[in-house]
Image (tube, rainbow, N blue to C red; front, side, top):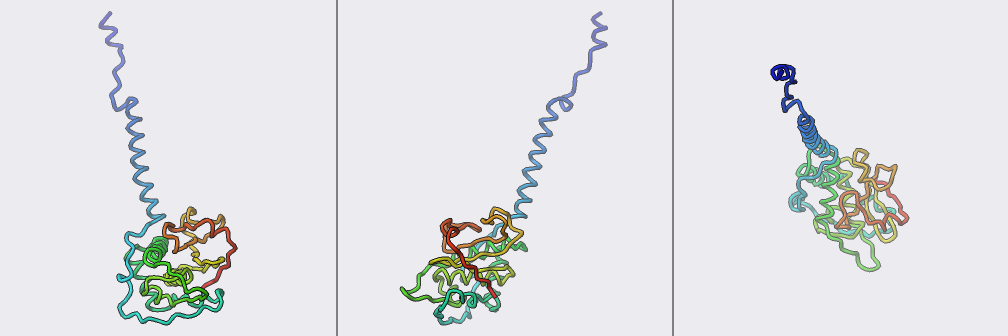
Amino acid sequence: MEEKNKAIEEPKETWWKGPIKYIVAFFLIMILILWIFPSYGVKLDPNPKVIPKIDEVVPTEVVFINNTSLDRKENIARYVKPEDPIIKYIATKIASLSCGNSRICQAKAIYYFVRDNLDYIADPVGKEFVEHPLQTISSGGGDCESGSVVLASLEEAIGIDSQLVLIEGHAYVRILLPEALSRYKIKKGEDWIYLDWTCKRCEFGEIPPKNLRKKAYYVEVP
């Protein structure tokens, strides 16, 4: 009888056919997800590998240009100079040192270059000046209008549509970058990314909330 029971006893299931196979499969899937998604995310939202200093991208032969008195803020766009060969050189140098072919990465690199290298320096009381962007870069500082002119000039120089944003007592920039992640686009339904270089704590696409609440005048760059 004992021999008969042994004969009909079902064979034990090997370990790799039991519940452990589901556990192993689960962990393999999780490893695959963790490997694929960060790589995909880097492609969607690349970051600059380095932000160069001014002396790393500005040619030594830059000529200083006299400051110009700003008669009306609406005329500020004429100081944006993306077609200037040295501005084009600087913008290209920043992009090539910091990034690959990604426009998102290049736009970030230029914003961080301006934010990290230029100091905010106010104009004399009762006066409003705007420097040529090369003058502001060479001196290492300027007021909000002058720095925004630099930022718009450099972004435009690599083909990124830019506008100057004027609010009461301040100026900043917005750039059109449809391919960027929605988290950088503060206003729903818009592909504009707002950049305030004077906000040293602001990351790409961040801006002090108080500035967004103010009535804005958008100046198209020619």
